[in-house]
Length: 86
Image (cartoon, rainbow, N blue to C red; front, side, top):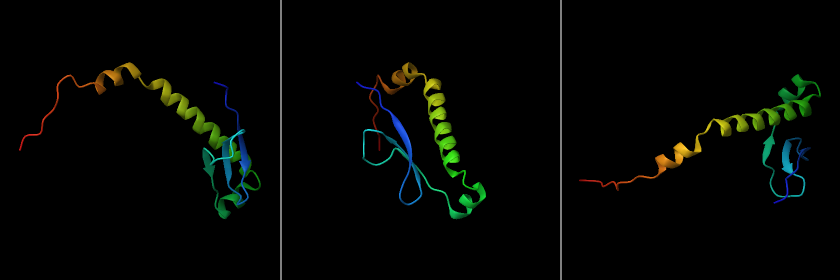
């Protein structure tokens, strides 16, 4: 399987999006700033969008490393069937 490459683009409506370079389908992430937020950022909205996306990717990596997949799989298997009694 070939690696995926991503890009951050500004959409025609002013939103920012993270998408695969080789895929024109819906973006993976979309960030929309209000007009008030854009004014407060003083033309730094692209940098803020990049930082938000980077933080999200980092957070997902942290969450993935904290999961003990073997323990979760063992919990998912119930050796005895459960019954509902009325």
